[in-house]
Length: 96
Image (cartoon, rainbow, N blue to C red; front, top):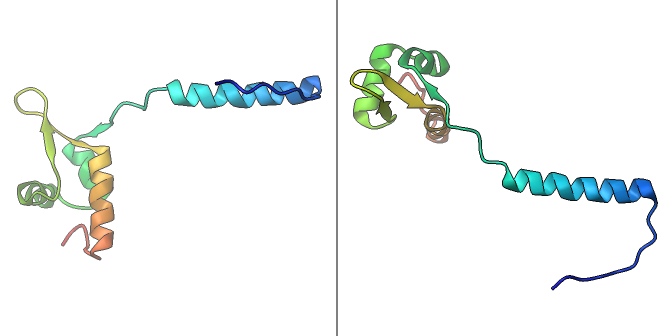
């Protein structure tokens, strides 16, 4: 049910109110940005670890790799950030 009310607004105040409502609606309708994938080399640079440590983390399940095609390996940026939070939560060094 729509509520109707009478208010005295200046043109500028009305413009601000409408602008705020339009911004809210645009944010609601805007899709989230696509997931960013990083190569193993980029992932190592972000975490400050070697490729061997990255491989060990993947085998241990600390990080999840994603394969597109037959050989290329990628890591999701969001999963890397979540792993960093986990490392900090348990006070582990990423290189441990």
